[in-house]
Image (cartoon, rainbow, N blue to C red):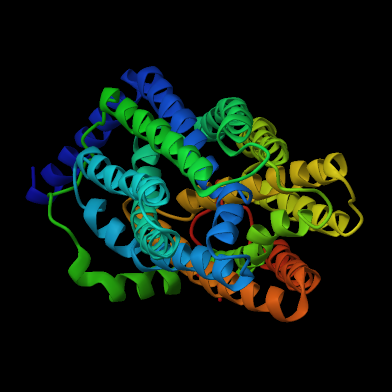
Length: 434
């Protein structure tokens, strides 16, 4: 037998062993990722929900919309800079779990710093420290998004991913709703203080750390064809090669970038709502519950729909719901009407975020997954950075209505681009069309 024939046979055997390992440990890994996602997303929702953190930054900055936009813009900027580095850390390693653990630990350390700064430092120093921590949080989260998604793609077959994301988002929604309610009631109360918000974020640190620890129980199979050396030296040529060779993916990146820029309104939903209801701890808790519970519960439906039809339809439907919910915000008055709007926004934003992330896994070959994730995440976060920074300036100069108007244009444009130019990738070969 020739050397080439022997090499091909060895590759087939390695691939067969990999698939057997995936099947053998599927139940264990499914449960592990479910627990990791439930606890981790519960904690991160407390930080990333458009309620506690914007209100916290508004309090620290003395009511500055620009500072709110700057703080969240810095977080997005950090997440723009690092996805390619995260891809380089794992794309050519047989195992990604060790890297995932230290990157995940660094991400959670920034959450702890945000909490401790509010508890121990004077207001001006706390504000500066939290700005730095949010930038670092974004940087490690940018790496974490690629690494954790790649890790999931190794151990969870595509036919089960929608179910997994739906279940973990549903379970985290239930726990996040309870935690948000109790946190808002006990820690923030009727007279919000920096200390109260800090305890919320301290709780987020504990929950996310417990979720990370759950990953220690997973079984990661050896990925065939990996020699343990990073391919970062071929960075830009490979990026360009992927974009040039796969037109469907290239068009998706463009459309996702435009649609993601539509999230510039996210931090300002709660500030707009403050003009129609007071931002007491109880009201913040109710709006956070509405946002997180709707977002995560709806992912049961989004996930089942994605498993049957693919993620493209989920992206289109979620963007449509996001547009309708934003329009309805102009008509909402009072706590309960505003809560219904937050239900729609939560369901829409979570559906879009999860579907836009998971669909990337299906635009080509497995060995390019980390780099495709890095390209998509980095470009969308870059758009999110510019949009969020611009949102603060728009809000200060023209009011929240102008922010929502620009957001609507971007959401609609991104949706139309996907509808017109991006076919469902499931079951298709990468396209070479221009």
